[in-house]
Amino acid sequence: MKETEKYAFPYPECDPPLVKDASQIAQFADLARAVDEQVQDVIDDATDRLIRPPAARLAVFTLPVATTDNLVVPFFDVAVFQLNWGINSLPDLVSGGMYINKPGWYMSGCHALVSSPTAAVLPMVRLTVNGLPASSWSKMAGNYGVLNGRLAALSAVPLSLSEGDIVRMEIKHLAAGSPAWDYRPHLWAVRMVDA
Image (cartoon, rainbow, N blue to C red; front, side, top):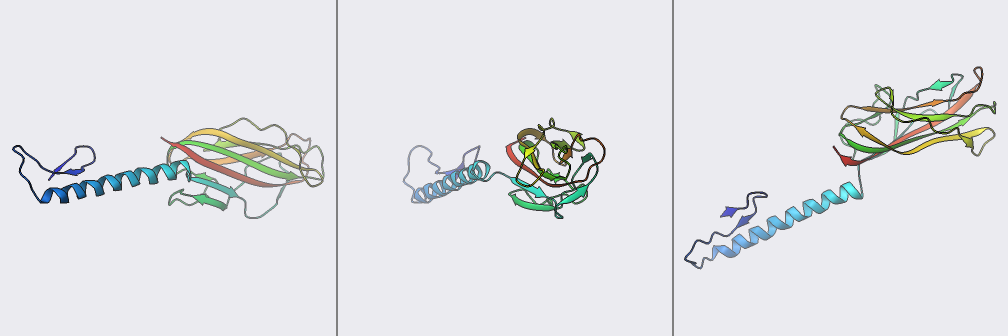
């Protein structure tokens, strides 16, 4: 039986002059099954990439986290969810960030709910990759729910990431002095295109 070059689909051998061969029908059946399997593989891959792309969201286990610093880098230790992310741990418990196990283009974002008895604590957030800024600071947060509660957020930031990169976030405010405040951060990413 012969095979196609690209996918090794089997096809009947038929050298002139044509001689009827009972095995040809079995060879056609093998071809049909091979094509069917390949088409299903393509459909499954497309479904995973378009409908269920790798995605994850991280949070901090102990909430809220209290501080008097003007700039913090949350240490993430809980995966709120992870879908098709792979075998590497989420979050990376050494760095406290999101470990990237496959290179590609990602849509990423973060948010932090901040509260403080000091009204001037107006937080901003940004993304970092391997400790370096990967986005601009968000605009200063507006009121959210509770007294002096503020929600700072970035959404849909495109990032080209490599295997082994660690994505984290920073939260800062520009209030004078060292007022007390607490934060509840979340960080997420969805792989859109493989590298």
